Image (cartoon, rainbow, N blue to C red; front, side, top):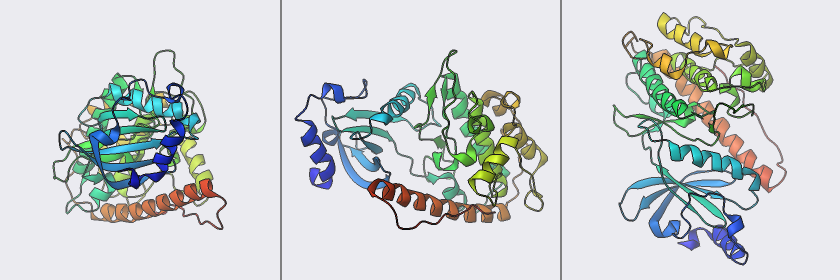
Length: 349
């Protein structure tokens, strides 16, 4: 097995020569058991600069899972971030949240074993649907809100709600929606003041961008941005000036329901978007309040097929994937050394 991971093995051999007790990050992790003695590692599902996600199989149960393997060497500054993610996952057990199954730690790596969602990412799935309507968007919204209501009640703020972190559990038509990636999650109490600039810029609330103190209301703003795209197929804050222009529009909550892109969308849907993307966080509904909205519950959401919206989501999704691939290459090259050239791609309608 170690032939597959020569870098990790080399790191382990180096670290075994030193006392390991000071090298451990996670109190709740299994240390006597080896991850590879409990799981069979299959294919690579995704790779970042400091972590790799593998599809794996539990040897005892036969269950397939996703294993996030995080390299610790040279990543001491990320210890707190990873600890916060695990702290949040340990407290969460909800049908609309990806569940942590197991956690292991060695002197050189952390292994987070997660529930495997095989239905694909939100937009990847939507563009393949034969019929897509407001009802489907309302279903997505309802299930994400259910997850947020639960996590907020546990005093956990996600802080990175975006399409990539909204998954379908299975390939079935009635699949549950799951929110994933609690890497920016924060457990709060009455004395906690959140000011950290984190998340993904196009989905960040104005108070986050302005580095003001903020609350769980930031998750509702982010969901509002996702819902906007679900209904029209493009981003609300796109600007020809790129990120600087996007940021200016975010802090002003400057977006429109442009014709003809919004002509087929119902007024209740637009009203919900307006409520979620209010510049004043105190005017946004809580997750519990939004769940009671008749449109979210599907009672008044239109079931008319939104072909033009689906086509725009397909185009938006293709560009999103292209940009993500470009950023991943740039991130790897930044670690390896200077890159010769780079090209940025601005989001377009």
